[in-house]
Length: 597
Image (cartoon, rainbow, N blue to C red):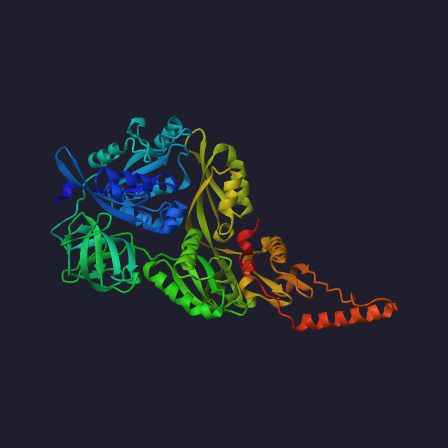
């Protein structure tokens, strides 16, 4: 198709502002989906996405729309709204010339809206502002319009008022896309270059790439090369998603489509890489490719050691289709064999855990999530650890560096004080405070990632009555006074519970965790001590009292010495039990950090 009649655009928004519902209406309006095949959140293919009401994997779709007698090819990408997937969103934006910014008329601008707007501006996209959910009684179009005008610098009349649920005003969105989004400007006569903005592994067909052809064209059966990974393969099939796969002879300049390859893993064709033809390769890759590094790590262990092989196979299969997932095998004296997995964030971890439990029918024990630490030893050797249990001998350590993040909180101005208090409680540093309008404040800060991993988001929601929203990006590593906090159960150190913590917070955290463990670990026939320690120094202790069986029930009458004799025998037995007895630690004990409150 002539490039001047192609429009590539995506929908960006905060979670739950109506992206997927708007995509449903556009598919209906353009006749891409017949009414009888229509269902809500059509582009969200995973059960998990439909249950949680969020988009996890982006989904491209091609629609044909006729205006004034001319048929236009509209390529839409429905992007995830969560901060964990912001790299995928940034690659999707690179594949487009325009973005439809959806803002909820009841909630207004939120943190991820801001983050996505900045990404769209960096990619130099034409932004079309759309206010959704105007049919709801709680909608406040005047206030939200003022927020959008303040953010984008557009005019109030430029904002489209729609209700994606009822379909009101949605046709105007299509017309705005055709009139305002520029057509692609690739060079059909140059060597082929296509941007991979998503890739996944299909059990029956191999690795499937979603690409945007920037220059040239890629035809079926052509030999292809990835410029960043140097992997080579064959384009077994090319085509477009409507929204199911429709095979076509080639993907032409400016178009978005899919390529079925003979590659065996998505690690050979990563998001952001450039595809070119092996026979006539392009010299220069498209900009913006970067290796994504996970920065949240957790140990996954099967409930029984005989399921270890099943867990290993399941993680391998998942990592074939998720190039951000990195894992290594680990062994714990308490939990046995398992895998240590790296994630992009806590939501990513939750999704992977649920998929393992549902799709592979596994019962898992998940240890407390942690981040990675960079360590310089006295001999200037650099070590990178992913778990507190791997920490070298403290006597040989020169400094420990932990990852810090740049965060942004969007909140009504009445709650600014609460948010500043929360940030300082997490060892964060407030950097800047600005106002989008008279009511809405944007607070930027820096903080150590480890302190925000567990319950920061929940606490933010509670101190702002649910109105606060949060977005972050990694800002580098900083040297801090960090110590390893160990936990002992009945005198035995449990490595899977060890955590890295700032020295100033170690006393409080030690006490908190020991109290939590006391609630979780069941009572035994003997007294069990729970202790927290830094090196050889114990800083907190709780005791779980023993069950007391009444051994004197069979006695009646006679001298009191008979009773004393039986109790002394029982005390002896308990002592012996304490020496040889094993304490069973339940799975809940390994996630006490996630349930601090």
